Length: 522
Ligand code: DQQ
Image (cartoon, rainbow, N blue to C red):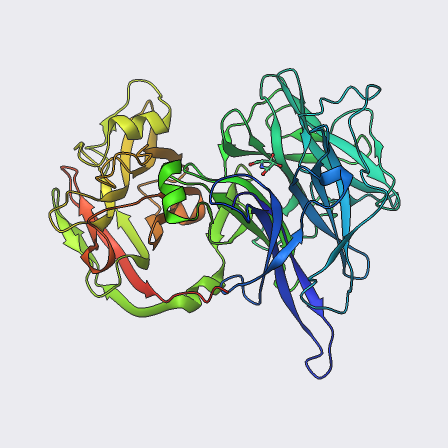
């Protein structure tokens, strides 16, 4: 499986239940093999975003306009709770075109059958519009303007200029390309899977995709094909010009990422029932293709995250949806304690291969913080200074998937630096020792976390599940997802530790851990 194509909450009106709903998740899927190919839209439903039931593929090649593949796209809920899907079809000439599908029967809560309009394709590259037929894909969820016209974005590029082409329609069938893209950036390359949505300027609630007022900022997220990461910008949506204006200026480049590990082709949706915006993303493999074929599957979707604007207005915050806590079993709470320089503290009593761990650290002063002479890319810093490299303040954090003799472990940790007059908190996920199988991708990941290490808690939550380690630093201000395939640290052989490999002591102010029950899948 790959890209998350769309999720929405579909209300079911039935008597006597009267009111309830199902989340519908669509994603890119190869029904004939475990590596990319033969792409259809797989379809799963859930009542809680945790337990899922797989249905038959919703959209698969059947028309001239999608005969070579049904690639990414998005759903939109039209007036009266009517879902529709716009997706990219690959036509007989291997051109990318945009198609529409609708549920056959709206009284089926599972929305099993989808019907394509015979008018497809609704948007196509022509010699007149100068669109490159191999760079025209992944329509967004549409939003409604005050003029009653729907708007949708399609990812594209012209030479090296990545862009989000804008289309408008009154009836969702006839689409007219706007003269200017919503936004474009020279040198950014192809924009895959764009997403464009409002976030409230204060608070954690979400709003519908069509909302635009003084109370919201807008987020433009794109999956940069050249970098294979999901980047976003915060700004405003100028509805009269139909243009996105980044807060950092029109010429600003993509800097912020949803996740500094493996995370791509993600999508958000507005969850009306819980009034939140939820993010779903694809986490690709660290295993080799040969191993993927052997194991018979590849690609997973990360735990859905609630997403909102940080009070600084400068970045987003992400947190696993609260429903995931239903899987927590046997809580282990450790009393606050000092973790001495060089100390390893085993966290007993939880299933180490399937766990949720929350830990907070406190440092009493920053005298021992290592001085950085120049600012380096945090990922490079994490590669040079893995968990075995000592400094004054750090590395301290968690060792997960650790084998008995520590031949294998994955470490997620903080390191505090002093750079000019600023204290910098680095969060790393170090996979270099995660597996003795060297065919795996063992790259280290890292990012700075915008937090004041003297006055705020230095917190980390890590969700561990067999081959995935999803970490949330600084209460969701920095996320790193890693894929690991240990050979020794498996089943009941795996262990979890808190560790401090710095020279200065740090205090653990909170440590709670849970074994996680299995979600019911299928
Ligand atoms: N995956 C889809 C494309 C999209 C890419 C094809 C992103 O539509 O651009 O499976 O991973």
